[in-house]
Length: 311
Ligand code: NAD
Image (cartoon, rainbow, N blue to C red):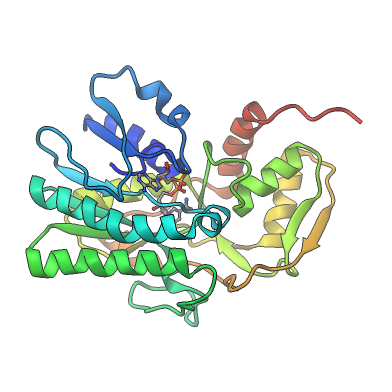
């Protein structure tokens, strides 16, 4: 697996190991951390390799699946690392595909709802082609992922590689970095440290947030299914950013106020997956209600964050 020391990747490592599948985790720790997989390090069926995917990569022995997750994923990260994001999405995807081809493995690309851009169709089915600004600040991520999908499709159609594309929608849970800039960790950090919760724009823009265990279960099911995708995996339960901030305040018992700040450029107004394909093909639907997922995440964040100084 590439990107296995990141947020999603580390949970995917655990899910595969739990199924008796050995994992080689390849990661350059650009946005991930070895701490995320430290608890797996002693296992004989787990190996960590610190490698940059922009260089060709090889692993010893047979490989059944190549899960390609390496990429900065939070807007704060990819805006700070624009060239690296384009490179891992292009060169990195190529190297991961070459590994899968050499090993005759099934290749699973972690794509994203960002391929739909600021969508003109709502909710977004897999057949929607997207509305992406190719020269906007977010294009380094959106277009890298779109290129990754195109390259994966080319390997499938011209080289006969067994591939799958999963379009992952906003996912949250333990091991997100409190400073990674995405809505859930930002709100949780702010609430738990007594800062104001910063909601962008008027907070009416929507997202559908999915708990990490559900997302990972969907990725594994797609990998094992033989379906090529693209397949949306994400929560169909849509919430406005303002409602999400209010829920975080309620669940943490914080006394933080809400502060409205500017919306970033090209920030999508709405985002909700059409998950009919995943349900029909894999019987997959998210199981963890947002309250429960947030409570589990709050528990983790509360342990990780420094205790705020009392006033
Ligand atoms: P993350 O930043 O926590 O993890 C990404 C991992 O990739 C990190 O460990 C990082 O060090 C590694 N990486 C980056 N560049 C690399 C390179 N050149 N070589 C080797 N490793 C490299 O992000 P995440 O949230 O875990 O996302 C994982 C994948 O899932 C990404 O591909 C992302 O686009 C996709 N995704 C995530 C979400 C989400 O909500 N978390 C939504 C849609 C898609």
